[in-house]
Length: 262
Ligand SMILES: [Zn+2]
Image (cartoon, rainbow, N blue to C red):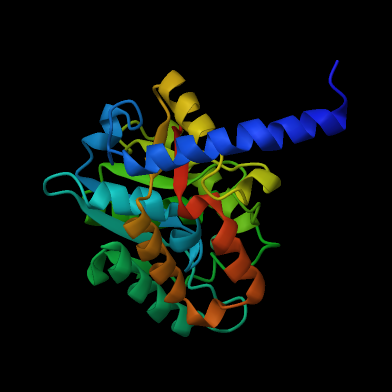
């Protein structure tokens, strides 16, 4: 029986280097939309809508999916609907401009990068958004942009923010109640410590995705990683030391895994 300290030493000496090597190999040999990582429904999407809650969510949590889907696929177009302008600190209009700059960096056209400023959808971690208000907003843009696939948060909303979770709950509700609504894929949350593991745990996620064909995995190349950092830099009003730390270690800047809402 291995003692805990010996086990920890063994893991650091043997497992960590192995994970690092496998991660480098996966990033170096990555194919943006490899069939074993991206199900056919997502690969064939033509008009993809990202539904987020605040300006900067797209940089923090969705960039690998945006970059990989929009850099591939003949004629595929991306749109982004941000359900609030992020006015919690009174910076809504600045944050709307920053979102536009971030969208440009990620390849989303200006006219398809919209931040709403609705009283029913305030940027507030203590307020649960009304499902009907979210549904109405999303339905309007799904129709306007002829969306055939939507991406959003999962049940926990990655950071646990009430607005993220309400966004996910509304999208799940609409996909269940409206058979004609496009398929919805949700970026998976991860336990707090695993969030800050950069690309080290990528091989484990890759194995999991291969074994679960309904899930998807998008991996940034080093160039796309730098592009993601630039989209984060567009959000100048949000620059804080802890956010810089987050982006330096966050796995969401390197890869995201998604599951389909049913
Ligand atoms: Zn947010």
